[in-house]
Structure formats: structure tokens, C-alpha cells
Length: 208
Image (cartoon, rainbow, N blue to C red; front, side):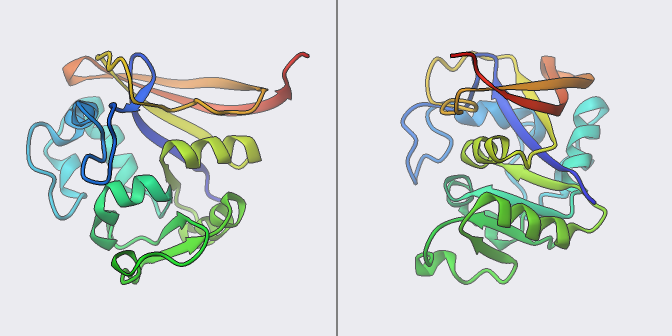
């Protein structure tokens, strides 16, 4: 069975988006800085598989791993902020979006997108679709729900050498559980990037 891996770019102070997020400002003020390592100053291509090819070293390695995943699970906010990736995140793989109720018309026309009401069902469907390939998870909400439900296997954190000072933190809002992680890889890339890969070990109730 495939592993479910969270891939997220995060500032050194723990933010995955800057302040003042909105539909028109999906990454918040200054949030684009978190993704400069993968887009390397170039416009975001229509086909995201092109991104890894123009990188090198560790940045190319982890971008290539991300683009080789077999399905995507994402929160609604991340999906809509990215314009739904035009209905194709990469290579035509299926996308499962956490959402209760029917989407607005502008988000309902993507043939590869399925809306799912809960994280466990979304992960189960994504695993079936991915086969032996890794399931890519995106978004803070999806990550928190998956960690709480015990359905997230690994985390790949792209640590960006910047302090945003405000915005959306990746791990805010987790319940009072202690989640043990094992670091299985550390890679250093261009632009002072550090890519940290963790395996989720176990979760215990916090001391009262």
C-alpha cells in the first residue's frame, strides 16, 4: 500500500502562507517567497512536471519525488488558492479535495477532481487510485486532520530560510496529542534550502 506524504514549504518560523490571505492573494503577503526554490524565479508553468527539470541537486531530487506521486489529497483552501491547478496538478493524477457539500460552479468542471467530506475517506480513495505510488498531501488543514486521524505516514518539509512573522502556521490547531516523528533524511539544496523528511511514529495523549 502506498504511503501518504505531506509535502509543504515552510518558513523558519513555521508559516506556510503570509498574512492577509484571500482568494485573490492565496499565499498571503510575501508567501510566494516560500516557493521560489521550486520555481526558481520562473513563471509557474502550465505543466508542473516541468519544474523539476530546471532545478538541480537536492531541490531537483525532492521536486522530482513530489511530481512522481500517484494521487493528491488537499484541503479546499489550498486547492482554490492554487486555482485548482487548472484541474491537473501533474501528469493527470486524480485529486481529492476535502469539502462538505457541492462546490461552486467554477470548481465543478474538473474531471480529475473528486470532492470528499472527510479525511479518512479521502486518503483511502487516494491510496486506491495511486496504487503503489505515493499519495501527495497538500495544505495545513489536510495535514492537521490527517495527523489527528492517524492517516498521515510521512512529512517532507521544505524549510525556507526566511521569517514571515505572520500568516498561516502549518501545525496550529492540532489537538493536545504528542506526535512522535523520526527524521529519516536531511538534504541541503541551493538557496540555503533544507529538506527534512520525517516518518510519523506514534501519537499519545498529552499529560493533563
